[in-house]
Length: 183
Image 1 (cartoon, rainbow, N blue to C red):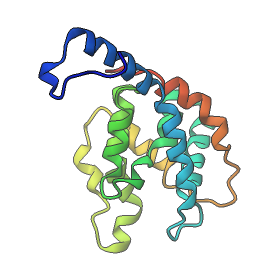
Image 2: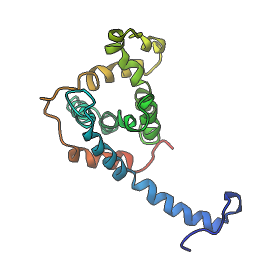
Image 3: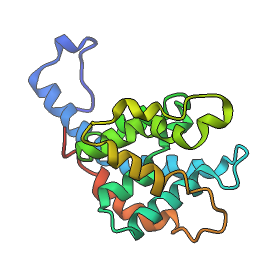
Image 4: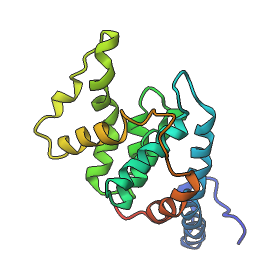
């Protein structure tokens, strides 16, 4: 069978769906390669900053690894802004949606909320509320999000920081994003 015969999902047979599951498995396993391609495209974007979005991500991941974080957190730091390309207004939510099946719930929550937590550092400068994160006080992952933004996000715009190259993180991306663990 090279393709299914149905035109509506409700008409598919068991054999067709088993056939499709094999293709789906291969597609999921190819996710790390697609992510690496997308990350490399972030190298083209300065948008007024002193470093590209890729360099920002590399600094974030390099700092997380140097701080002793596990691979899930290092990869999360690398991918935390991956949503910028397609969802700049809610990039945090997109990054969390991409990573949620692959990382523990704490990391998914930190990714989802990091945009709001990050406002602490800049929002007051443009007349917005820098304390948006306060609505999450008492949440079990609140301090993790504060820590992430302080150590692996707001400080990752240094053109002289010796970040590791994208190729260094590729094996980690493959290990973390190669198979859903929380799906």
